[in-house]
Structure formats: C-alpha cells, structure tokens
Length: 79
Image (cartoon, rainbow, N blue to C red):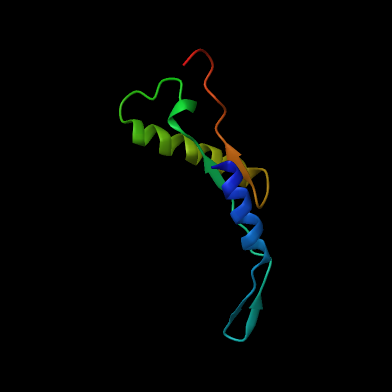
C-alpha cells in the first residue's frame, strides 16, 4: 500500500488543473497506512483500531511536512 500511494502521490503532483481561469499546479497529499498485522492488540472493533492507527500515521505525516506517506510500524513479537 505504501508503494502504491507513493506512486499515486508522484502522479498527482505532476497534474495541473485549470479552474476559473487559474492554473493550479504542484498539488500534494499526505497519507497514513496500516494493516491488521501491524496492530499488536486491536481489541474491541478491529476496523476502528485500523482507522485509528492509520489516522495517527496521517497526522504524523502532516506534522512532518507535505507530500508524506507514513506507515504504522509493525507490532513487536511473533505473529
């Protein structure tokens, strides 16, 4: 997912749009990525835990600057 989002980010940054007579260029986005194997103890609703973890990664990406893709680190221990 991280690799694909980075590809999408690169393609998005190359796009230019005309809107109401103005040229809009160099757009970016940031993203947070998580999958169930990255959660040490999802507890409760696994879907909610995934969203919360991905949101945390997104907030970290935004704090670090524009055009970031951040992945939740793998949980410690055996799977």
